[in-house]
Length: 289
Image (cartoon, rainbow, N blue to C red; front, side):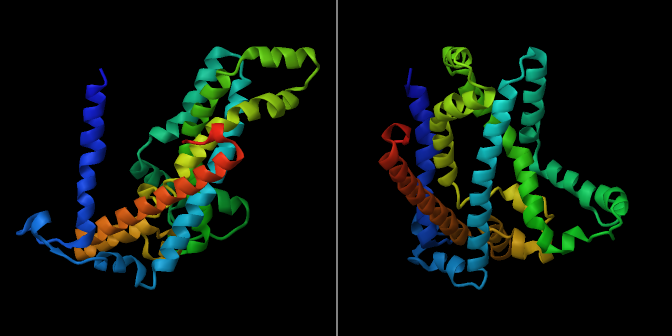
């Protein structure tokens, strides 16, 4: 029975790994992948010998690091609140509401943000700022606002999915713990602090480790579609993925994009090993391996 699963894993996950050799070759389509010339680490120079290397690396790490912390904290809080909703219909309704943004395409999200922030007829410039006595803002030409905008969009889109995972873990906690705590006179907050959070910690740790493994990967749609690829915003919206995509569209060099992908995978793998080692030193049961 495991054969279909193993075949899927081999075809979908391991066979494409052959493509990593593209990162070390000067691809010539007439010669093919194996026949193209080896160029060593030349394809990696594109990422590290430009003046933008520091900016895209800084943006990628800081954005993703902040997203991991904020999303996990808010998802746990929302999951605990949803667990307290006793009405079955309302509980399902709230779960649907928080999960719905995760199912919306980032292209649609980009146009929703445009409807709010458009300089000419956006909802914020025409309705919110006049009420506050403020002048309209050209959102898509001023980069200083975009760290906040991207954070809000990311939280709105992804917290619901994490929340459902944590809610499933909370529902699986034995209710006898809460009944015993109630008999002992523990308040709701004391039950959350002494029972829910400690028993939820393994799930939080696993989700954090998985997120750290992809800290060098960015949500391409968030950083490319939502700012509408606006040039003035690139100092605060450009990350490794968008930078490589623009380079690929300009130069058509798939060796460079393959090198960037391999670099992101290696760094993510190393970060997972380091994070897992740190967790295992503190509590081996909560580590991935």
